[in-house]
Amino acid sequence: MSKRIGVVTGGGDCPGLNAVIRAVAKAAAKRSWECVGILGGYEGLLEPPQIKPLDYLSLSGLLTRGGTILGTANRGKFSAKVGHGESRSLPKELLDAVKAGMDTLGLFAVVSIGGDGSLSIAQQMFEHGVPVVGVPKTIDNDLEGTLFTFGFDSAVSCATDALDRLHTTAESHNRVMVLEVMGRYAGWIALWAGIAGGADVILIPEIPFSYDSVGAKILEREKLGKQFTLIIIAEGAREKDGAFVTSGAQTKTGEARLGGIGAVVGAEVEKRTGKESRVCVLGHLQRGGSPTTFDRALCSIFGATAVELVAAGDFGKMVAFTGDQIGAIKISDAIGKLKSVRPDGNLTRTARALGISLGD
Ligand code: F6P
Image (cartoon, rainbow, N blue to C red):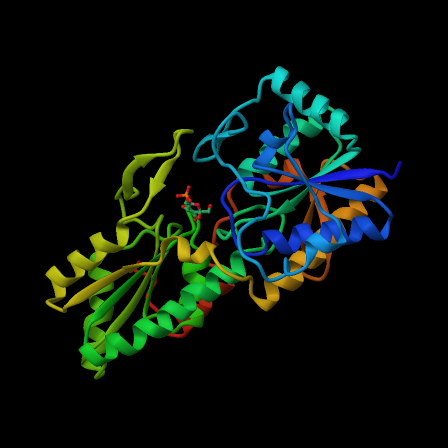
C-alpha cells in the first residue's frame, strides 16, 4: 500500500488555500504518496473521519479557485484561541482522538494550513506525537517568522483596487473617503494598500491616531488645492488612549469581532472639518476570489516545501518566507505572538517620506 498524507485547512479562509492543497497533493504524488483532504478543519479527523481523496483529476482548476474545497472552521472543538494572544490547551482525549483518526485513515503525516489559531492546534498535536508540518495562512500577515503569509497579497490587491475606485469618486465630489480594511490587531493590509493605492492618511493599530492630526492633513491638502482626501484605516486602529471599536459581537471563542472604526472616523472628520465624508467597509471581499500572481506562486512554493519537510521527517516545523529563501521554522516560534508593523520601520518611513499622514 502506498504511503498516505493528509492536508487540512483551518481558521478563516483566504485566497490561495486551494493552491496550497493542489501543490501539496502534486508534490506528494511525485513521491508516489497518496494525499487526502480532511474536511471541515481538524474535526474531519475525528471518528468517523471525513475526507476527500485528492487524486490527479480532482486538482484541476484549484490554482486559481478561491476559498477551500475542504471547508474550514474557526470554532468548535478545536478552537485553540480564546482571545487576543491567548490560547487554550486542547484536552488529551481530543488529541488522542486525532491520532486514532489518523490511524484509521492510514496517514503517516498531516500538513496543516492555517494562521495562529490552527497552528497552535498543530503545535499541540505535534507535542502529542502527531507528525505535522504547518503552512502559514492569513490575510492579516501577522504571523511571526515569515515575511509573508499567503493570502495577504491578494487582500492587499483587493484593498488597493478599492482605493483606486474610491479615488475617482472622492475627487469628483470633493469628499473625504474612508476605507476600512481587515487585519485584526496588525496594520499590514492598510499600510501596504495605502502606499500602493496612494492614500493620504493611513491609520493602523500600531500607531494610535489623533483627530487633530488627521484633520490637519485634510486642511493642508485643501490649502494645496486638493479638495478630497483618501483615508485607509485598519479595523484594529484606535485613537490615542481610545479603545478598539468592535461590532459588539464576540466570536464563540470569546474573541472580539473588530469593525466599525471607519464609520466613527468618518463622522468625526466630517464634524471637525466640515468636509463631506463617506465610509466604505471592504470586509470579506478581501478574503474571497482568486489569489494574485504572487500568492499563486507563494502557495505553490509553500505546498511543495511542506512536502519536502514531511519527506525529511522534519515535523513540528512551519514553512516560512525568510526573504532570500523559503525555509522552515519551528511552529512554536511562529505562534502566540503578533508580528506587528514597526512604527519606525521601512514601510512607515516610506509612507511619511511620501507625505502620507499616519495620524500621529
Ligand atoms: O484573520 C482574518 C480575518 O479576516 C481578520 O482580518 C478579521 O478580523 C477576521 O478574520 C474576521 O473573522 P470572521 O470571518 O470570523 O468574521
